[in-house]
Amino acid sequence: MRQPFTTLFTAFLLLGMWTTEVSAQERITSKVPAEYESVVSAVQKVMGLLQDVTQRHATEPISDQILSISNRLTLAGPVTGGFRGAIPEEDLVEMLREIERELKSIVRALERRGEDDLSRRLENLLDDLNDAIDQAGDDVRISRRSVNRYQIRKGKERITIRTRDDWWWDDDNEWEDRSDRWRNRTSDWGKYNMDWRSSTHAFTGELSHRWPYREHGLYRTIPGFRYNRVEGFFLGFARSPLEWSSWDRGRIYGQVGYAIGMRDWRYEIGAETRLGNRRRNPNFDVKVGGAYHLNTGTNDLWKASWAENTSAAALFRHDFFDYYQTEGWTAYLVSRVTSFFQISAGFRADEYTSLENEASWSLFGGDSFRQNPAINEGDMRSLVFAVEGGQISSFRRRPSGAAFRLEAEIGEGLGGDFDFSRYLGDVRAYARLTRDSGLSLRLRGGFTEGTVPLQKAFTIGGIGSVRAYNQNEFLGTRMLLANAEFSLYEPDIMDWLFDDVTLFGTLDAGWTNLAAGTDEFSIDDVISSVGFGIALDDRMIRLEVSWPLRDLGTGYKPSLWFRINPSF
Image (cartoon, rainbow, N blue to C red; front, side, top):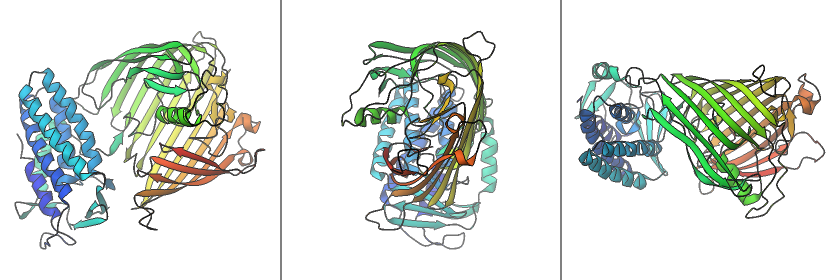
């Protein structure tokens, strides 16, 4: 195949054994953590076998998938000493866990093709990789401190690597200009159009654990297990639609299960196919699909995840969502124009029905579930358009980047019971202010026209919007929301108390026209809150305290929340 990948791994092992000042003229010996070396060794073995797999399947889609993985490891991965992109933080173990999941899908693909020998060899090497990842644990981290300074960190041990020129590398104990090699490699692999992006980078339309938007304007896939106040426990199974990172070209997706509280079945059945050609242009693709469903829906998925809502409802009798039932069908087209931009268009025909509380149980008690609000029932037909774009790095940990989502739903003149239009925009920005601090911002707004049914109005208040007020307390046909969160990562206060945690402060401000009593926006009508919190796992497991800045009849009593998702 091409130049052996193992030389790149050898380069970083040699580079990692030298500290504070390493350049083309100067070397000093140091010790790289053994756990890090075990990961590098396991990855080397996997890379060698991937070359064999690629050679045997050079003309098949599996080759593209393998080359993409190889690219992550050799060009963007810190295990090679890469850091070719401007990546402020790279989590080696997290990257390899994701790649491990992709390699497992390759094993299954090889088994289907009858390549038993290759599949067994790759499966055995995956065991080695898994053992190495477990040995490394979660405390082996890679950080880019400046343009030419990198750091391997294991617990409190740190090794700094400096190089004065990114275009020099060490191979077989000889420093040489690698720019010519890189140009040759780029030319040789150009036909595969491989980016060098890191696996910590999330691109438009990716999974919600890597991408900030959980909403989908065209289809409403929800988990096969959940608990809420209108369904009680829902027991079933679900399959998600196609992902852009998948090499499958078609899929049957959906969900079926039984809602115990409602004593009724819920289901969705859909199909998708992809029309793009990954070999010609891996960044452009088109999905065409359709589905029929009888299911429980909500407009509140942007405030919390289904998993978090289920946990809060089952443990403490807190249900953050408002619900309705839809029965009908949808047809849609989604196009990924580039890695940073996608557009969607679809048609929906749904019969909307109100739902009532059917459950009251929780493990630890708490206040009674609030009543699920009624909606305007009837037949709704609408056209839905969405535009989404951006790029986010390390969304679950220390995010940086920006993303936006714009959605329009047009229900006028299509023959349904409702004539309305609804427009919604959501922009988010994540900035790394320093190595150990960051600022997250969200601006969300929407407005409607025509005769708007209640289920298409906007609600704010509580979790995911303006904390310290009652959940979904403020209703409107026009809405503005702004959130800011300043985070201090691993604060150097008391190591035994604040090790591997994040401290953060919050500011929320929101406005709706019905709560204000006028369609004209005024600062005097804005509701706001401030707070602070502490998070584990960088920012995923959170304890939040928030105070209202306006007394709306309940005083200034703070609210306390335990969360398993960032607010945005």
